[in-house]
Image 1 (cartoon, rainbow, N blue to C red):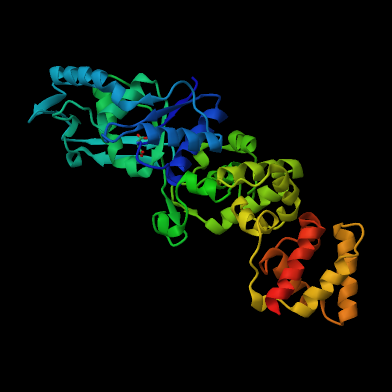
Image 2 (cartoon, helix red, strand yellow):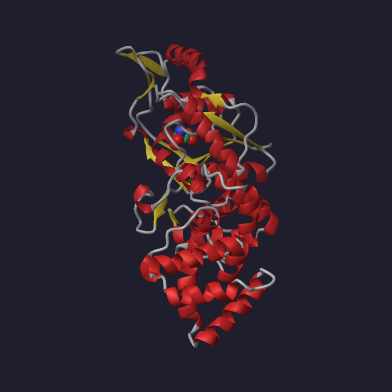
Length: 419
Ligand code: GLU
């Protein structure tokens, strides 16, 4: 039997990275088994406009490369079906009316349990389970009814979801049994915590997929990183391609204890992915990223700047500040400029031929000897005059790319500002 799972986001705002972690595990499981992964928008509990949230969800998943099979479904579309089934349950005596709402009758004795694919056996004493509302007095089904009904109708084989839903599972199991349906396998994935052991929230850093995207993380790095929260193929492997993860992922290897979202590890991993990109592809990613930021620097200029930063940055989001001097004028702080050195650099570079990083390097090294100064003393004011900052890509390459005219003009202006 082929497996079929569903990703079931509630359409409330931007997609949270914790939710995506759960969806990723659904997706990995389905793809690894050649099964299907559906996308269901769970809008029973929200009367809010869902269109925008639904678009965001699709956009975020698509960016991550997490795809789904068939058309997206909306839980509220199952409303009529749920009412019909609730009437059947009432007729069978498994449910009853209560002040206009319909409640499902839970057994009073015994236990409701299941073999969780991640956490092992879980049981709830039935006396602890309240009769759950399945249809509200306004006629809308509740999540606890619509969700198992859809799982049944969609022939879902495995429900892989966050462990905050564990307390819902006995209710959904009882409902499915009353409907005469053999329940799916349940797998409850532990929540993700920050390194301080607290629930992952804004205080820790980015939490929505959108935020990670605009900060310049690569989707493949984020997927690799997320896959390793609560799952590991072995004790040591960290960098894994998407295909390798799909191939090696199993629910049995998913840990029942909460995983930690380590931002420093993600930064490291993203840097590894960025540096490993072929130069041409790296340049194209930068072009796309800069445009997404709404910056209209010319594509060729961005491509030319790419090799200068590839070894330097761990997130594409660091590029605009580091490379701005190549596209826009600079306003160097006067305190960091030294007119004597800037004038000498201007005099020396005016004659450099050809205008290449190698020739520029030779000129500047000779200049250090002539001035009897250490490279650090000579390069610092030049760097500030040229780039407007003490931190920049390689100085020789930056000068080459900026061109002789602009470079010399900035050295002269720097000398004037400082004088
Ligand atoms: N909509 C629920 C959530 O966002 C998922 C519930 C389920 O998977 O059954 O957590």
